[in-house]
Length: 408
Image (tube, rainbow, N blue to C red; front, side, top):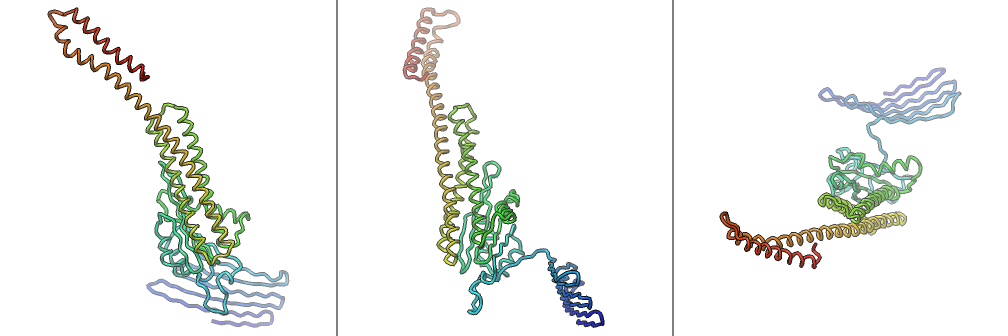
């Protein structure tokens, strides 16, 4: 529908286009409206609105501009939608020789899309709209127990893990998937263990967002932003190793102090710390191997991006080496504690053997001769004294020999 109105004091033009479909009482409608207005007192206005009505859910966008005698030209733009994103075209390079060589050439900057949880909407956005490979989408949808790296013509797909210490010494693997290209970074979290809060999975990206909002972080490329996120992961691993090193030091002090503790409980503490250190070391080692491979695969990335990935490799190797050193120290502490416990058990067994050696001959002698020396009607006092003297000598000789051996 078009309407034009012209008078002595103002002129108005409207153009409204509507498309509508209905079925089973449900209506879907699209309406675009463009209008302009001018008055003799100097007012000028123009606006364009796009309105969607899907079963009563209203969404859309609008842009307007005005100028009056009191105010200079101004404009406004608004969007009403459940979700909103801006992204370059799919990563595939343009086949038009007259067009830009890649997506980044069309934009002054890049886009970061963070997906907290995998949903059907995320599957549609990353698959149908951004054109990512089905294998990469499968890896985002399913849980990966080891890191991964895939190379595509102009982007990398990476899977890494961050540790989270749970109850009972269990270490959760918090998965972070990344699509890193010339003009776009996509991060996908999970899948998560039901016992892990979503806030824990978003810990590293939330810290990076806070740094971006405060102005302390200003990455110039998706690789730079990915570097900030993964560096936060590596720093978190290093902090956990430092905390475990403090715990190992306290355990070592208890071992050297030779305090009497419940052996089973103390060994559980030692092996819990060992398990946590080993898990973090495994994550760091695997992450380093992934970035070692990514450096070789990312032939499309600029030199500064390769340098950032090389630094991430160095960070992962440093964490793995420190964790291994703490593991070696903890193994030494555990071996010392077990050796001392085994020595105590050996000494106890030796003393029990001495007791058995002392009492066994006496028991044998008394059981055989006692019934013939001490009787109800008559006791042979001479033989009784002789037998007691023999028993004392038989007990004294093993005790003297054990004492000379240092057993008691």
